[in-house]
Length: 392
Image 1 (tube, one colour):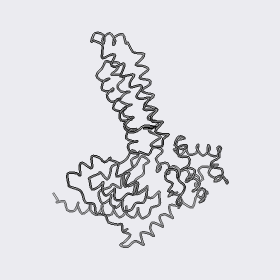
Image 2 (cartoon, rainbow, N blue to C red):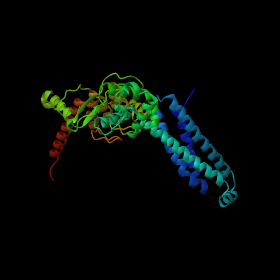
Image 3 (cartoon, rainbow, N blue to C red):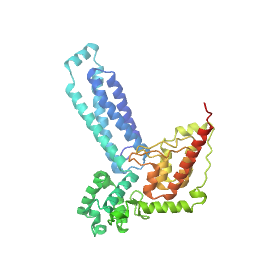
């Protein structure tokens, strides 16, 4: 690699930490007491490894930052390894003298402090990676706009008359950063996604979505449908409706559907592979691959993953299932396929949202009709199964 760090680099440091942990557990008292700090570092390293394995397109700035952190972890582990080897090279009597006289105590105290420091820094880095997920960040941007509309943020910078022209000025941007921090977007994430946030906010502002509404008009939902990509410009609009309006639209669509509100979705047959290569293929697929495929709207990949036996209810580190992604992106056919193969409608992500709530927040009425339809189908099936049970 020319820059940054790869999953292989983090894997090696994590493996090294695990070996040091085991060595500490089998060594003298002072080293055994230190093993819990080494174990904590190992856990956090594995979290970092899983993240960069799942998201291979991390910006160079983050890879460089992660390299600095992993180098720091590697350095303190090497110092501990050196001290361990010195201790283990001693004879039994010398080791007893070491333990009794507490030789190396100062070095161990320094290493303990460094282990805790590295674990804390790496944990903070992982938290930033988690919070910078585009869907999660977009939900917080929506939250800010909704609060401004509801009059809960009097004097907000986004309500200034000339905000569209001045949003990139240092003073306005700094004030916006503070407001974004209030809704849960950290300053680091804000800076790293500067262009995305600017374009998102400009799209919302030009559509007049920050105008306050009267209390009697109902609670408002902002449904962000801006296809910005990583750092692009707005490719579609943000729509905003009150809950009452959305309910009316949902009822209208249900009435328009044939067969009493049943939505017709393309039927896709998934043939489960039974040949020996099925298990081999599954071994080389990440557990969360189906979540990513649903997020990308890749129906063929979702079907293929189900065919080799992938778990449709697996969740990523933010608690998002494949159905959550389909609901968020309004991928109806993918949602139907997942539901036909046992996808749960009750999954709750780290923000407390179910697939139904994600579809509601995004204004995907057809998805909600599908969810209601499947819920009814499952309830009917459960009742039929119950009546088939022989009475005692």
